[in-house]
Length: 275
Image (cartoon, rainbow, N blue to C red; front, side, top):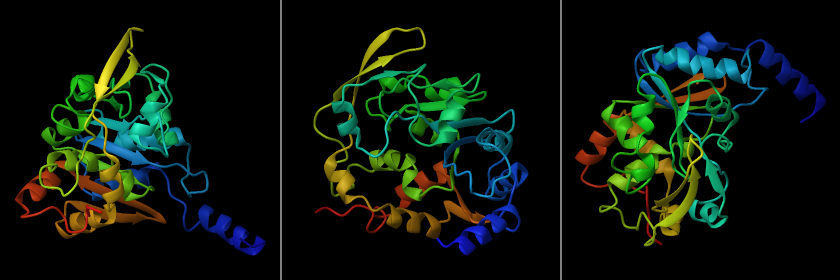
């Protein structure tokens, strides 16, 4: 970028593109989130985004959007840029108290917040804060699959929760794996590998646990086209999008997404194509 373009961009970020925490809350509310809701957030952080405030202020805005009676949760995964299978092969220990979240700075800042609890899954841990936080994460390590019955994603549906995607691609939405699990018998590909894989977890009391988990298959990862799922969600109105200055903000209604998928005669066209 030339020097002139850089100066123009900096000026725009301070003026036309600038926004604050109250704008974040207002946008989330306009997309259908209400005080008292359970909301799962996928968010990125860039110092040059135009946001007037710190990453802590951004996390607080998410909390303000659901209010003190609402529950906020974020993915708190210990890896990025690799598959579940690749990460588990590394043999790393997941310490619920200390293992850093690798899925965006807001998630790590949130994880460290006083009162936040975290589920005991070795690859897809969920961090949560609010009245339903303990309920949301409880028993995740005992679920037959990380995304299926009894998981935090399943409880998001039960709680009529919302999923917020703020300034990151739609394919960061982990709830997509829950939908794959739900429709696994209707997809053309195997959702999980044949074998479960053990992961070593240390809980909040320092106890070591072996948690066996199903692993997303390489076949599923190769076949997935999240853009097709997003197009279908927009058409069925279970996903709503707004631009906050130049930040794209999307909200998905978890319960409505499930209802629409179960009513549909077939999975969204092009979502998974067997090779």
